[in-house]
Image (cartoon, rainbow, N blue to C red; front, side, top):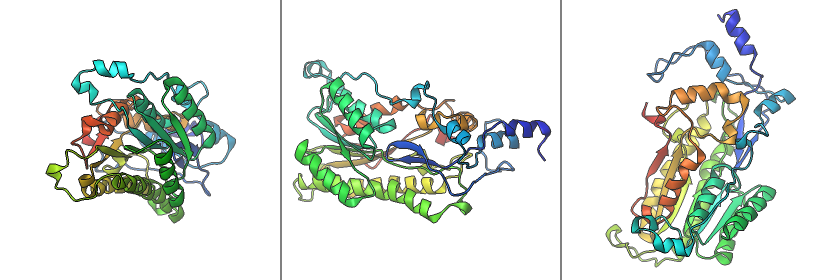
Length: 376
């Protein structure tokens, strides 16, 4: 039974936790049809070691339940004075041709000169940061695929203005096969041969126990995260294959093929089970993305196409910078050997390496960037 002190602490938390819905690069909150209050009454016998034992009250403070009240929506909205609540746009200075000639051979392998990229979910969050990283690496042009026209247009214009690199927005929904195929063809026509794909579009419905999970929400998660990854990878892959000599080559003799890279953003949730929030559908979808990447890497290596996944851990994004998640965030940090959340910029170097010549011999890999979370 909870003590009076524990009940008092738990009562301070707004009746909030909710379903998290990150739509194709847009972090919004999806109002559910009924409240869900996951109450974790006992600690699992298989809990991770090396951390303090949390009381039931601690878990209550980190757990959430759904409500459509104004107070809940305010609690979930990032503060206007919080830098993570704003777009993560920053001043971006690309590599100039003159600077590139002064780089050592090692650093030149990180330059993306003459390459064209597509970034899905590229209007904000991780996708926007990755788009900026591509621009900073001297890329020829970038296409942002997103379902938010106003934000997408403004971010593309801002990047183009600050870098002088063509960044163009396309209104694309990764669940729409025709929309995806048409947009990829437009990019090839308007910007040129596509060399790089970064798929960052995705959704997450969290804090919903599996026994209460609606099949419609499960299907939506799989449709966007897994099937969406396949739709965009297939469309871009077809374009890349068509531009490459289609004769079969053994892996040992394809060094003369063009180097093209597909990067699917997965998650450490594809290989571990998160604590304390239940999110079976999301975890399953990201596990599927990792295996999809390996399969595509095996099939397309003969065309000079590399396919890899990046699996972030808990990142310090606007989605996680809300009062409702403070309790959970402390638990996440305690279970991370490095003791903190990751900064979104800490993915950029890996993205550029995989996209360019530096990662030319890397394919079929799942690269986890989680501060060590998955090793405990």
